[in-house]
Image (cartoon, rainbow, N blue to C red):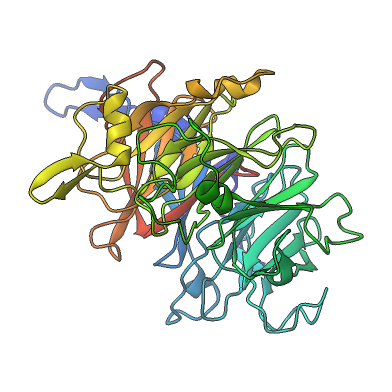
Length: 471
Protein backbone atom coordinates (compact mmCIF):
# COMPACT_ATOMS: atom_id res chain seq x y z
CA UNK A 1 0.00 0.00 0.00
CA UNK A 2 1.33 3.42 -0.92
CA UNK A 3 2.45 5.89 1.68
CA UNK A 4 -0.08 8.44 2.83
CA UNK A 5 1.19 11.69 1.35
CA UNK A 6 -1.81 13.94 1.75
CA UNK A 7 -4.22 14.46 4.60
CA UNK A 8 -6.06 17.68 5.34
CA UNK A 9 -4.88 17.87 8.95
CA UNK A 10 -1.29 17.32 7.91
CA UNK A 11 -1.01 19.94 5.19
CA UNK A 12 -1.72 23.29 6.84
CA UNK A 13 0.79 25.00 4.58
CA UNK A 14 -0.44 28.53 5.31
CA UNK A 15 0.10 28.14 9.03
CA UNK A 16 3.60 26.80 8.37
CA UNK A 17 4.43 29.75 6.12
CA UNK A 18 3.12 32.22 8.69
CA UNK A 19 5.36 30.77 11.39
CA UNK A 20 8.61 30.91 9.39
CA UNK A 21 11.19 33.54 10.33
CA UNK A 22 14.25 34.37 8.26
CA UNK A 23 17.47 34.43 10.34
CA UNK A 24 20.55 36.12 8.87
CA UNK A 25 23.94 35.84 10.57
CA UNK A 26 26.59 38.46 9.74
CA UNK A 27 30.15 37.08 9.73
CA UNK A 28 31.64 40.58 9.78
CA UNK A 29 29.90 41.96 12.83
CA UNK A 30 28.85 38.83 14.61
CA UNK A 31 25.35 40.18 14.89
CA UNK A 32 22.20 38.24 14.14
CA UNK A 33 19.30 39.90 12.38
CA UNK A 34 15.89 38.31 12.70
CA UNK A 35 13.49 39.32 9.94
CA UNK A 36 9.85 38.38 9.80
CA UNK A 37 8.74 38.33 6.13
CA UNK A 38 5.65 40.28 5.14
CA UNK A 39 2.52 38.18 5.09
CA UNK A 40 1.80 36.64 1.68
CA UNK A 41 -1.37 37.30 -0.27
CA UNK A 42 -3.57 34.65 1.24
CA UNK A 43 -7.13 33.50 1.15
CA UNK A 44 -9.37 33.06 4.16
CA UNK A 45 -10.48 29.46 3.59
CA UNK A 46 -8.98 26.89 5.95
CA UNK A 47 -9.18 24.00 3.54
CA UNK A 48 -8.44 22.94 -0.02
CA UNK A 49 -10.00 23.70 -3.39
CA UNK A 50 -10.11 20.82 -5.89
CA UNK A 51 -10.05 22.03 -9.50
CA UNK A 52 -10.94 19.68 -12.36
CA UNK A 53 -8.92 20.47 -15.47
CA UNK A 54 -11.01 19.17 -18.34
CA UNK A 55 -8.53 19.36 -21.21
CA UNK A 56 -5.43 18.15 -19.35
CA UNK A 57 -7.21 15.34 -17.51
CA UNK A 58 -5.97 16.19 -14.03
CA UNK A 59 -7.10 17.69 -10.72
CA UNK A 60 -5.19 20.53 -9.07
CA UNK A 61 -5.45 20.81 -5.27
CA UNK A 62 -5.14 24.43 -4.13
CA UNK A 63 -4.51 25.47 -0.53
CA UNK A 64 -7.28 27.80 0.57
CA UNK A 65 -4.86 30.02 2.51
CA UNK A 66 -1.76 30.23 0.31
CA UNK A 67 -3.84 29.88 -2.89
CA UNK A 68 -1.06 27.80 -4.40
CA UNK A 69 -1.28 24.39 -6.08
CA UNK A 70 0.02 21.88 -3.54
CA UNK A 71 -0.73 18.73 -5.48
CA UNK A 72 -1.71 17.52 -8.94
CA UNK A 73 -3.48 14.25 -9.70
CA UNK A 74 -2.95 13.14 -13.32
CA UNK A 75 -5.36 10.31 -14.06
CA UNK A 76 -3.50 8.96 -17.08
CA UNK A 77 -0.42 8.59 -14.88
CA UNK A 78 -2.42 7.08 -12.02
CA UNK A 79 -3.93 4.52 -14.38
CA UNK A 80 -0.50 3.54 -15.63
CA UNK A 81 -1.36 4.82 -19.12
CA UNK A 82 0.80 7.95 -19.47
CA UNK A 83 0.08 8.29 -23.19
CA UNK A 84 -3.69 8.12 -22.77
CA UNK A 85 -5.61 11.31 -23.54
CA UNK A 86 -8.23 11.95 -20.86
CA UNK A 87 -10.83 14.72 -20.91
CA UNK A 88 -12.05 15.07 -17.34
CA UNK A 89 -15.70 15.41 -16.36
CA UNK A 90 -16.61 19.06 -15.86
CA UNK A 91 -17.82 18.37 -12.31
CA UNK A 92 -16.14 16.22 -9.66
CA UNK A 93 -16.94 15.12 -6.11
CA UNK A 94 -14.88 15.12 -2.92
CA UNK A 95 -16.42 13.14 -0.05
CA UNK A 96 -17.15 14.91 3.26
CA UNK A 97 -14.24 13.25 5.11
CA UNK A 98 -11.89 14.36 2.31
CA UNK A 99 -10.70 10.83 1.67
CA UNK A 100 -12.18 9.96 -1.71
CA UNK A 101 -12.24 11.97 -4.92
CA UNK A 102 -14.73 10.94 -7.63
CA UNK A 103 -14.02 11.98 -11.21
CA UNK A 104 -14.97 10.80 -14.67
CA UNK A 105 -14.03 10.94 -18.31
CA UNK A 106 -15.93 12.72 -21.07
CA UNK A 107 -16.06 10.68 -24.28
CA UNK A 108 -13.65 7.87 -25.16
CA UNK A 109 -14.14 5.21 -22.46
CA UNK A 110 -16.32 7.47 -20.25
CA UNK A 111 -15.17 5.77 -17.04
CA UNK A 112 -15.54 6.91 -13.43
CA UNK A 113 -12.63 6.65 -10.99
CA UNK A 114 -12.54 6.84 -7.20
CA UNK A 115 -9.20 8.13 -5.98
CA UNK A 116 -8.10 7.60 -2.36
CA UNK A 117 -6.49 10.89 -1.30
CA UNK A 118 -5.00 9.33 1.82
CA UNK A 119 -3.45 6.29 0.17
CA UNK A 120 -2.66 8.06 -3.11
CA UNK A 121 -4.20 5.49 -5.45
CA UNK A 122 -7.27 4.69 -7.51
CA UNK A 123 -9.37 2.26 -5.47
CA UNK A 124 -12.34 1.80 -7.81
CA UNK A 125 -13.03 2.12 -11.52
CA UNK A 126 -16.48 1.96 -13.10
CA UNK A 127 -16.30 1.32 -16.84
CA UNK A 128 -18.82 0.87 -19.63
CA UNK A 129 -18.67 -2.89 -19.28
CA UNK A 130 -18.01 -3.43 -15.59
CA UNK A 131 -21.48 -2.76 -14.22
CA UNK A 132 -23.54 -5.32 -16.12
CA UNK A 133 -27.22 -4.73 -16.80
CA UNK A 134 -28.95 -2.97 -13.94
CA UNK A 135 -32.36 -1.27 -13.99
CA UNK A 136 -32.69 -1.77 -17.74
CA UNK A 137 -29.39 -0.09 -18.56
CA UNK A 138 -27.45 -2.19 -21.03
CA UNK A 139 -23.80 -2.94 -20.45
CA UNK A 140 -21.72 -0.52 -22.49
CA UNK A 141 -23.39 2.70 -21.34
CA UNK A 142 -21.13 5.66 -20.67
CA UNK A 143 -20.62 6.15 -16.95
CA UNK A 144 -19.50 9.79 -16.95
CA UNK A 145 -19.94 13.02 -18.88
CA UNK A 146 -20.47 16.61 -17.73
CA UNK A 147 -22.43 16.44 -14.47
CA UNK A 148 -21.67 14.74 -11.15
CA UNK A 149 -22.91 15.55 -7.65
CA UNK A 150 -22.88 14.14 -4.13
CA UNK A 151 -26.01 14.20 -2.00
CA UNK A 152 -25.94 16.71 0.85
CA UNK A 153 -25.90 13.93 3.43
CA UNK A 154 -22.83 12.44 1.72
CA UNK A 155 -24.49 9.10 0.98
CA UNK A 156 -24.93 9.01 -2.80
CA UNK A 157 -23.06 10.11 -5.91
CA UNK A 158 -25.06 10.82 -9.08
CA UNK A 159 -23.47 10.96 -12.53
CA UNK A 160 -25.30 12.14 -15.64
CA UNK A 161 -24.04 10.40 -18.77
CA UNK A 162 -25.21 8.94 -22.05
CA UNK A 163 -28.75 10.21 -21.43
CA UNK A 164 -28.83 8.22 -18.19
CA UNK A 165 -28.24 8.96 -14.51
CA UNK A 166 -26.00 6.51 -12.66
CA UNK A 167 -26.22 6.17 -8.86
CA UNK A 168 -23.44 5.05 -6.50
CA UNK A 169 -23.22 4.35 -2.78
CA UNK A 170 -20.45 6.43 -1.18
CA UNK A 171 -19.95 4.26 1.90
CA UNK A 172 -19.41 1.01 -0.01
CA UNK A 173 -18.15 2.58 -3.28
CA UNK A 174 -20.58 0.47 -5.28
CA UNK A 175 -22.80 1.00 -8.29
CA UNK A 176 -26.50 0.83 -7.39
CA UNK A 177 -28.06 1.23 -10.82
CA UNK A 178 -29.34 3.86 -13.20
CA UNK A 179 -32.33 6.04 -13.99
CA UNK A 180 -33.44 5.61 -17.59
CA UNK A 181 -33.66 9.32 -18.35
CA UNK A 182 -33.76 8.53 -22.09
CA UNK A 183 -37.36 7.38 -22.09
CA UNK A 184 -39.04 10.09 -20.06
CA UNK A 185 -42.31 11.26 -21.59
CA UNK A 186 -42.97 14.99 -21.32
CA UNK A 187 -46.40 15.53 -19.70
CA UNK A 188 -48.99 16.64 -22.23
CA UNK A 189 -46.90 15.65 -25.20
CA UNK A 190 -46.08 12.50 -27.14
CA UNK A 191 -42.49 13.65 -27.54
CA UNK A 192 -39.74 11.78 -25.77
CA UNK A 193 -37.31 13.73 -23.64
CA UNK A 194 -34.13 12.22 -25.03
CA UNK A 195 -31.73 14.92 -23.92
CA UNK A 196 -28.63 14.33 -21.87
CA UNK A 197 -28.94 14.91 -18.12
CA UNK A 198 -26.52 17.79 -17.74
CA UNK A 199 -26.25 19.31 -14.25
CA UNK A 200 -27.58 17.60 -11.11
CA UNK A 201 -28.50 18.99 -7.69
CA UNK A 202 -30.02 17.51 -4.51
CA UNK A 203 -32.47 19.34 -2.25
CA UNK A 204 -31.41 20.30 1.26
CA UNK A 205 -33.90 17.86 2.80
CA UNK A 206 -32.14 15.02 0.92
CA UNK A 207 -35.36 13.83 -0.74
CA UNK A 208 -35.18 14.99 -4.36
CA UNK A 209 -32.67 14.97 -7.19
CA UNK A 210 -33.18 17.78 -9.72
CA UNK A 211 -31.63 17.53 -13.18
CA UNK A 212 -31.30 19.99 -16.06
CA UNK A 213 -31.24 18.44 -19.51
CA UNK A 214 -28.78 19.48 -22.15
CA UNK A 215 -30.94 20.71 -24.98
CA UNK A 216 -34.61 20.31 -24.16
CA UNK A 217 -35.10 23.22 -21.77
CA UNK A 218 -36.49 21.15 -18.90
CA UNK A 219 -35.75 20.51 -15.25
CA UNK A 220 -36.68 17.07 -13.99
CA UNK A 221 -37.14 15.87 -10.40
CA UNK A 222 -36.66 12.35 -9.02
CA UNK A 223 -37.68 11.02 -5.60
CA UNK A 224 -34.56 9.47 -4.01
CA UNK A 225 -36.00 8.68 -0.58
CA UNK A 226 -36.10 4.93 -1.26
CA UNK A 227 -32.36 4.59 -1.95
CA UNK A 228 -30.65 2.17 -1.80
CA UNK A 229 -33.54 -0.32 -1.68
CA UNK A 230 -35.27 1.07 -4.75
CA UNK A 231 -34.26 3.42 -7.54
CA UNK A 232 -36.61 5.94 -9.17
CA UNK A 233 -38.35 4.48 -12.20
CA UNK A 234 -40.23 7.60 -13.28
CA UNK A 235 -39.83 11.33 -12.81
CA UNK A 236 -41.53 13.05 -9.92
CA UNK A 237 -41.87 16.28 -11.92
CA UNK A 238 -40.96 17.53 -15.39
CA UNK A 239 -41.00 21.32 -15.79
CA UNK A 240 -40.67 22.74 -19.29
CA UNK A 241 -38.92 26.07 -18.93
CA UNK A 242 -38.58 26.62 -22.65
CA UNK A 243 -42.34 26.32 -23.21
CA UNK A 244 -43.00 28.99 -20.60
CA UNK A 245 -40.46 31.32 -22.17
CA UNK A 246 -41.88 30.94 -25.65
CA UNK A 247 -45.58 30.97 -24.85
CA UNK A 248 -46.20 33.03 -21.74
CA UNK A 249 -46.45 36.73 -22.58
CA UNK A 250 -47.64 38.10 -19.26
CA UNK A 251 -46.65 41.75 -18.86
CA UNK A 252 -43.64 42.06 -16.62
CA UNK A 253 -43.07 38.31 -16.62
CA UNK A 254 -39.39 38.92 -17.32
CA UNK A 255 -37.40 41.74 -15.81
CA UNK A 256 -34.81 43.68 -17.71
CA UNK A 257 -34.92 45.36 -21.08
CA UNK A 258 -35.80 43.49 -24.24
CA UNK A 259 -38.31 43.05 -27.02
CA UNK A 260 -41.79 41.68 -26.62
CA UNK A 261 -42.33 37.95 -26.52
CA UNK A 262 -41.11 35.66 -27.96
CA UNK A 263 -37.92 36.91 -26.34
CA UNK A 264 -35.59 36.23 -29.28
CA UNK A 265 -37.10 38.98 -31.40
CA UNK A 266 -39.99 37.10 -33.01
CA UNK A 267 -38.50 33.62 -33.21
CA UNK A 268 -39.13 31.07 -30.43
CA UNK A 269 -36.09 29.81 -28.56
CA UNK A 270 -35.33 26.44 -30.12
CA UNK A 271 -32.72 25.32 -27.63
CA UNK A 272 -32.20 26.00 -23.94
CA UNK A 273 -29.15 24.33 -22.46
CA UNK A 274 -29.38 24.10 -18.68
CA UNK A 275 -25.72 24.66 -17.88
CA UNK A 276 -26.30 25.98 -14.37
CA UNK A 277 -28.59 24.77 -11.60
CA UNK A 278 -28.84 25.56 -7.89
CA UNK A 279 -31.45 25.12 -5.17
CA UNK A 280 -32.27 27.72 -2.53
CA UNK A 281 -31.60 26.84 1.09
CA UNK A 282 -35.35 26.62 1.79
CA UNK A 283 -35.97 24.15 -1.10
CA UNK A 284 -38.74 26.43 -2.40
CA UNK A 285 -36.89 27.80 -5.41
CA UNK A 286 -34.63 26.42 -8.12
CA UNK A 287 -32.27 28.54 -10.21
CA UNK A 288 -31.65 27.50 -13.81
CA UNK A 289 -29.14 29.19 -16.08
CA UNK A 290 -28.41 28.94 -19.77
CA UNK A 291 -25.85 30.54 -22.08
CA UNK A 292 -26.50 28.57 -25.25
CA UNK A 293 -29.28 28.40 -27.79
CA UNK A 294 -30.46 30.52 -30.71
CA UNK A 295 -31.56 33.45 -28.56
CA UNK A 296 -29.54 36.57 -27.91
CA UNK A 297 -32.36 37.72 -25.66
CA UNK A 298 -34.57 35.84 -23.25
CA UNK A 299 -31.90 33.64 -21.68
CA UNK A 300 -30.42 34.23 -18.25
CA UNK A 301 -30.95 33.12 -14.65
CA UNK A 302 -34.48 31.81 -14.13
CA UNK A 303 -36.08 31.57 -10.69
CA UNK A 304 -38.48 28.60 -10.64
CA UNK A 305 -41.00 27.71 -7.95
CA UNK A 306 -40.44 24.08 -6.82
CA UNK A 307 -42.56 24.23 -3.66
CA UNK A 308 -45.18 21.51 -4.19
CA UNK A 309 -47.61 23.30 -1.87
CA UNK A 310 -47.40 26.54 -3.85
CA UNK A 311 -50.08 27.75 -6.28
CA UNK A 312 -47.29 28.74 -8.66
CA UNK A 313 -45.43 25.42 -8.53
CA UNK A 314 -43.40 24.81 -11.68
CA UNK A 315 -43.60 28.41 -12.88
CA UNK A 316 -40.72 30.63 -13.91
CA UNK A 317 -41.29 33.58 -11.57
CA UNK A 318 -38.37 35.82 -12.48
CA UNK A 319 -35.39 36.20 -14.81
CA UNK A 320 -32.14 38.12 -14.60
CA UNK A 321 -30.65 38.53 -18.11
CA UNK A 322 -27.29 36.96 -18.88
CA UNK A 323 -25.76 33.73 -20.11
CA UNK A 324 -24.82 31.75 -16.96
CA UNK A 325 -22.38 28.87 -17.06
CA UNK A 326 -22.45 27.94 -13.37
CA UNK A 327 -23.85 29.08 -10.03
CA UNK A 328 -22.70 29.24 -6.43
CA UNK A 329 -24.58 30.40 -3.34
CA UNK A 330 -23.35 32.31 -0.32
CA UNK A 331 -23.34 30.38 2.97
CA UNK A 332 -26.20 32.52 4.32
CA UNK A 333 -28.32 31.89 1.22
CA UNK A 334 -28.79 35.60 0.47
CA UNK A 335 -26.57 35.83 -2.60
CA UNK A 336 -26.40 33.86 -5.83
CA UNK A 337 -23.07 34.08 -7.68
CA UNK A 338 -23.05 33.62 -11.46
CA UNK A 339 -20.09 33.07 -13.75
CA UNK A 340 -21.37 34.32 -17.09
CA UNK A 341 -20.37 33.51 -20.64
CA UNK A 342 -22.01 36.60 -22.13
CA UNK A 343 -18.99 38.01 -23.92
CA UNK A 344 -20.93 40.62 -25.85
CA UNK A 345 -22.05 43.55 -23.73
CA UNK A 346 -22.03 45.67 -26.88
CA UNK A 347 -22.90 44.86 -30.48
CA UNK A 348 -22.41 46.79 -33.71
CA UNK A 349 -25.31 47.23 -36.10
CA UNK A 350 -24.56 49.07 -39.37
CA UNK A 351 -21.73 50.94 -37.75
CA UNK A 352 -23.63 51.87 -34.60
CA UNK A 353 -22.52 50.37 -31.30
CA UNK A 354 -25.42 49.30 -29.10
CA UNK A 355 -25.80 47.51 -25.81
CA UNK A 356 -26.90 43.90 -25.89
CA UNK A 357 -29.76 42.95 -23.58
CA UNK A 358 -27.28 42.15 -20.81
CA UNK A 359 -25.43 45.42 -21.43
CA UNK A 360 -28.70 47.34 -21.32
CA UNK A 361 -29.64 45.64 -18.07
CA UNK A 362 -26.33 46.57 -16.41
CA UNK A 363 -26.28 50.13 -17.74
CA UNK A 364 -29.84 50.73 -16.54
CA UNK A 365 -28.72 49.76 -13.04
CA UNK A 366 -25.78 52.15 -12.95
CA UNK A 367 -22.86 49.87 -13.78
CA UNK A 368 -20.00 51.63 -15.54
CA UNK A 369 -16.68 50.78 -17.16
CA UNK A 370 -18.08 47.72 -18.91
CA UNK A 371 -16.03 45.92 -21.53
CA UNK A 372 -16.68 42.91 -23.73
CA UNK A 373 -15.34 40.10 -21.62
CA UNK A 374 -16.58 37.34 -19.38
CA UNK A 375 -17.96 38.54 -16.05
CA UNK A 376 -18.94 37.01 -12.75
CA UNK A 377 -21.63 38.74 -10.72
CA UNK A 378 -23.62 38.56 -7.51
CA UNK A 379 -27.42 38.60 -7.39
CA UNK A 380 -29.35 39.60 -4.28
CA UNK A 381 -31.82 36.77 -3.55
CA UNK A 382 -32.43 37.59 0.13
CA UNK A 383 -36.13 38.17 -0.54
CA UNK A 384 -36.60 34.47 -1.30
CA UNK A 385 -36.17 33.68 2.39
CA UNK A 386 -39.31 35.66 3.21
CA UNK A 387 -42.89 34.29 3.14
CA UNK A 388 -43.91 36.63 0.30
CA UNK A 389 -40.88 37.41 -1.87
CA UNK A 390 -40.63 40.68 -3.76
CA UNK A 391 -39.11 39.48 -7.03
CA UNK A 392 -38.38 43.02 -8.19
CA UNK A 393 -35.55 43.15 -5.64
CA UNK A 394 -33.73 40.21 -7.25
CA UNK A 395 -31.04 42.03 -9.19
CA UNK A 396 -27.29 42.18 -9.82
CA UNK A 397 -25.36 43.89 -7.02
CA UNK A 398 -21.72 43.51 -8.04
CA UNK A 399 -19.47 42.61 -10.98
CA UNK A 400 -16.18 40.70 -10.88
CA UNK A 401 -13.73 40.09 -13.70
CA UNK A 402 -10.54 40.91 -15.53
CA UNK A 403 -9.65 41.67 -19.14
CA UNK A 404 -7.74 39.30 -21.39
CA UNK A 405 -9.06 35.97 -20.11
CA UNK A 406 -10.85 33.04 -21.69
CA UNK A 407 -14.29 31.68 -20.87
CA UNK A 408 -15.49 31.43 -17.28
CA UNK A 409 -16.30 27.87 -16.28
CA UNK A 410 -17.10 27.49 -12.59
CA UNK A 411 -17.49 29.58 -9.45
CA UNK A 412 -17.59 29.00 -5.68
CA UNK A 413 -18.40 31.26 -2.77
CA UNK A 414 -15.93 30.66 0.04
CA UNK A 415 -17.38 29.46 3.35
CA UNK A 416 -15.66 32.42 5.00
CA UNK A 417 -18.19 34.63 3.12
CA UNK A 418 -15.46 37.01 1.93
CA UNK A 419 -14.19 35.48 -1.30
CA UNK A 420 -15.40 34.35 -4.71
CA UNK A 421 -13.23 32.00 -6.77
CA UNK A 422 -13.64 31.52 -10.53
CA UNK A 423 -11.96 29.25 -13.09
CA UNK A 424 -11.09 30.65 -16.52
CA UNK A 425 -9.90 29.10 -19.76
CA UNK A 426 -6.61 30.36 -21.04
CA UNK A 427 -6.00 32.03 -24.39
CA UNK A 428 -5.78 29.82 -26.40
CA UNK A 429 -8.26 27.59 -24.58
CA UNK A 430 -5.94 24.56 -24.73
CA UNK A 431 -3.26 26.47 -22.82
CA UNK A 432 -2.97 26.83 -19.03
CA UNK A 433 -6.07 28.09 -17.27
CA UNK A 434 -6.43 30.16 -14.14
CA UNK A 435 -8.13 30.09 -10.74
CA UNK A 436 -8.83 33.71 -9.79
CA UNK A 437 -9.88 34.99 -6.38
CA UNK A 438 -11.98 38.09 -5.64
CA UNK A 439 -12.86 39.91 -2.44
CA UNK A 440 -16.62 40.10 -2.02
CA UNK A 441 -18.16 43.57 -1.99
CA UNK A 442 -20.39 43.95 1.06
CA UNK A 443 -22.14 46.96 -0.48
CA UNK A 444 -23.36 47.70 -3.98
CA UNK A 445 -20.52 48.64 -6.34
CA UNK A 446 -21.10 49.92 -9.86
CA UNK A 447 -17.61 49.09 -11.13
CA UNK A 448 -15.93 45.78 -11.90
CA UNK A 449 -13.91 44.28 -9.04
CA UNK A 450 -10.55 42.82 -10.13
CA UNK A 451 -9.02 39.65 -8.64
CA UNK A 452 -6.60 39.88 -5.73
CA UNK A 453 -4.90 36.61 -6.67
CA UNK A 454 -4.37 34.47 -9.76
CA UNK A 455 -3.30 30.81 -9.62
CA UNK A 456 -2.23 29.03 -12.81
CA UNK A 457 -3.94 25.65 -13.32
CA UNK A 458 -4.10 22.91 -15.90
CA UNK A 459 -5.86 23.34 -19.20
CA UNK A 460 -9.55 24.35 -19.28
CA UNK A 461 -10.26 24.22 -15.53
CA UNK A 462 -13.91 23.66 -14.72
CA UNK A 463 -15.25 22.37 -11.42
CA UNK A 464 -14.11 23.81 -8.11
CA UNK A 465 -15.01 21.43 -5.30
CA UNK A 466 -14.52 21.16 -1.54
CA UNK A 467 -15.37 18.14 0.63
CA UNK A 468 -19.10 17.40 0.51
CA UNK A 469 -19.70 20.65 -1.34
CA UNK A 470 -22.97 21.17 -3.14
CA UNK A 471 -24.02 24.61 -4.36
